[in-house]
Length: 336
Length: 279
Ligand SMILES: Cc1ncc(C[n+]2csc(CCOP(=O)(O)OP(=O)(O)O)c2C)c(N)n1
Ligand SMILES: [Mg+2]
Image (cartoon, rainbow over all chains, first blue to last red; front, top):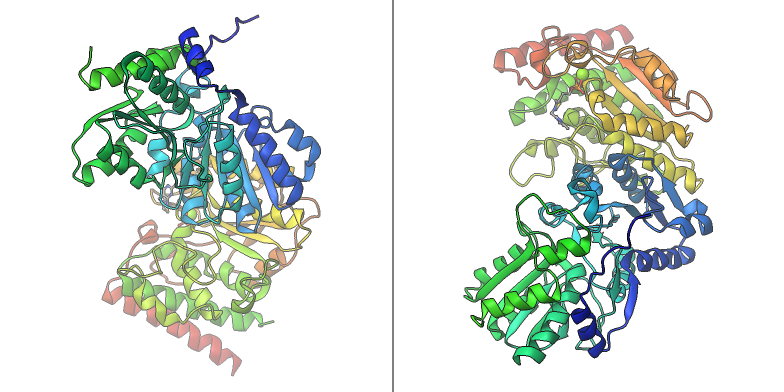
């Protein structure tokens, strides 16, 4: 028997979450699977295509309920995306589901040519993304996918931070007439209430917390840690920090990025991705090209041999937790 | 239905056009376009239920050209079938032209953007599967190069086509025995080819890829119920031009003025002979 995975949240972080009244949700993966099943029950044109990944994609119930709407291609990710393109070209609304590590490397050329260049409205679903499979090693990590997928034309990239964003993103992807890359992990996540009442839309940031000291711009499963760090910085240092969830990595909500850069004293980006070519560099590009100078730090996985451990261990090691992000904020402001 | 002789004449005119546009653009994949002209001729003039008027019909047959580099042959045949005026090819490979050096859906009649080898078969599998799922009754065809078969993705697609019993799927192999570096058997041997496809669960037929009647017979209906069809078309790279036939350098060779004139003279003579024979 293996030991239970170490918690993603320190006791201090859990206490902050409790003070904020955050409720624990479930894994985005489960939210995805249930949302897709509900959509597919109402629309027989929706298909899930899997590469021996129906179990890891939590699509067992989907396969049982709708056996005619799931297509298995075997352990063949290039085939997965090629077949998805063919189905999509004939009017099927396809969700091609496979671990992000394989889907965005092994079948990258099929994503680029068969889906995006050929313009078929397929949703490419990268599950167990980032370091979700932390302890399994680099073969199973997707820390390159933002960089490569951002460099492909005609692809919207959505990285939900909680169950709400996941649910809405799956619905938006099903309605999208152009290709979407949807990327999420498998750890249970806190639910994150928005600071405003704007409905979810692809291409739009979600402000979770207002403030003008430090702006945390984050995406995916790091957003919660930024939210906790902001709350902690308020109680320990009296800082008012802004937290912006950027569920859409491309096209990036540059208005939200520029507002943060103009209105806050420092900007920190956080992502479960290598620091090369991901959210941080996208944000830096927007800020620099607007001629804005600001204190700026990209927090992600550095360009080094990735440390061994669970997702929680890796987040802690590279400062992607509440404690790490709060320390980075103080450092950036020049506070001890 | 056009007669064999009418089609044979078409092939000569297609070859003339292929050379004309490659010469005009100053670039192109000459040898592989000439080797698949007869296959495309039979597909578009006898087999595929598709026309400019039915191109948006969800039940149209689909053709996906996996060996995208032989785009000139495809463009010439599509133009002849009325998808666009052949004079559009004046812009082939030019600045801001839709007529890129590989197929794209910006061109009327093209189903899929191809050009990277090893993509067409899995896409055709998905297409044939969509037809089966909806009981739509349309067929999917793809054209592969023999060198292209070294791409592993083809064999993923081959497994899936047989697994799903896609008898509405046909893969045609333009088996001209040459690729860029030389003979396919020397670069990466794939023989015995027919045995491989049948071991993968496909119904296989080997035909002379320049015999219009034999191609028609192999393509007009699925070879065997419950199995996808593989038609191994034995072809000659550079077919129709004596000095290009079976010569590797014509893979993407562009004829100079003298070669162009000689090639046209050969085709013109063949056209006169074929027309004369009828008179
Ligand atoms: C993935 C990929 N690798 C390499 C190429 C470059 N390429 C274009 S044509 C060709 C040779 C193809 O040989 P074959 O499949 O036998 O085609 P044909 O003889 O009919 O021209 C190569 C290597 C490519 N287009 N795609
Ligand atoms: Mg060849």
